[in-house]
Each structure stands twice: as C-alpha cells, then as structure tokens.
Image 1 (cartoon, rainbow, N blue to C red):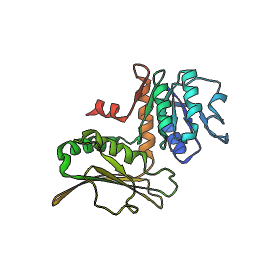
Image 2: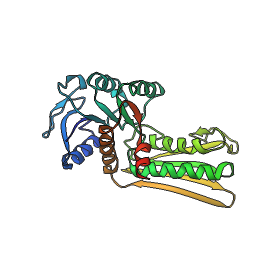
Image 3: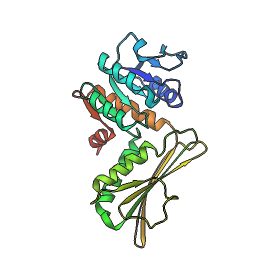
Image 4: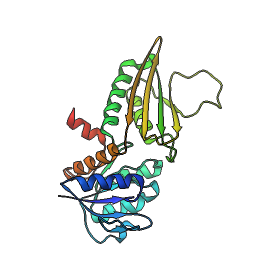
Length: 254
C-alpha cells in the first residue's frame, strides 16, 4: 500500500489528485496540506507540513512555488519522497530542489502528462532532424486562472528542442516591442489565457515551403493527476536520492 500526502489538497488540482487516489486500490491518503487548514472528510488536513505528526512514502504537491521551502524541509527531515508538480519556480528555487535531491528522491516535471512527455521526445527528434533549416515556434493555451506564463510545459518543450538543435537558441516571449526580422536562432513562445482551457501545446517547425506541427491537448485535469500518481509509484521503487522526471518513466516504456 502506497502511503501518500497531498499538498494543496483543497485546490483545483489537489481535489482531482484526491479523487484519483481515493479510487486507486493500492493507495492510502495519510493526510493533506492546505494553507487554510480546511477540513476534508476523507483524511486529516494540516495547515503546514511541519504540523503533520506521521510518516508517508511520498508527497504530491500541486500548490504554489511559495510552498516549496517548507516542503523541502519536511521531505529531508522525514525522509519523504516528493513529487513536485507545481510550475513557476524561480531559478533559485530550482537550485534548492537540485540540492535537496541529493538527500531524498524528488520527481519534478513541468507537466505530469505522459502524452506531453512523449511529445517532448518527438520534438527533440524533429529538432535534431530539421536543424537549421526550420524555425521553431511554440504556442501554449490555458485557462484564465493560470498565473505563470509561459507555462512550464512550453519551457519543457522548448528545452527539448534546444537540446537537439545545432546552435544555442534564444527564447523570445514577445515581439511587439521589436521591429526586425525573426532571427534564425530564436525559439518563439506565445501564451494564450482564456476560458477553461485545460492545456493546449503546439510546436511548429516552419521551413521553406513546408510546415510540421506537433500538438497535444489535455481534455481534463485527470491526465496530470494520474501522471503525478504514476510518479509517486515510480519514486516508491527508486534506488535512492536523485532528481527524476517524466523522461525516466517514458524511457521505461519506449
């Protein structure tokens, strides 16, 4: 039985994760963390990780970058593996995660969808094949409540392309202030916010007289919750401390 903690359990994604875990026969939710400490009928809820008196196999976090430091401290002190599904971390926070992963297993991904991470692999292969001959542009669309832009997933896809390109690209997030032709070494990233779009990501390879488009659409938040639970199961079998990602899971499958 996998003993889990859910950080941000009363948020939009936290509620979806809760439902997915309640339906899983091999999972037991030990407790949840919520800033307001709002009660949940299925398990105890604490306003801070430090207030939880017990142990657990892993913790899934869909909350806010502001919650990172207490979660890292909790994980290292209690030896609890962390699944960090939150986006919008600062460079300094990413360094904190990297340092903590030397002591405990940490799973972090800009997107917990298995499909998105398969797409990232395809983007990398396309960038390697098309090289300098095609311009790379990324368009991401999300609901109007999403705070960070561009999305962590858009950056994940941009990084996948950048790793395979024969040059060091520059990420361009807006063009209205610059009046000049597009530089061949750019990766353009555009963000759309509106309605209740769960998440659409499109990678465009535009060449001379031909265009290749790779696209992923999330139809519900369950794909992210299921991916986070898959990550928690993965950490339960991890050999030891380290920083893991969805690419580690994808490599097991394909």
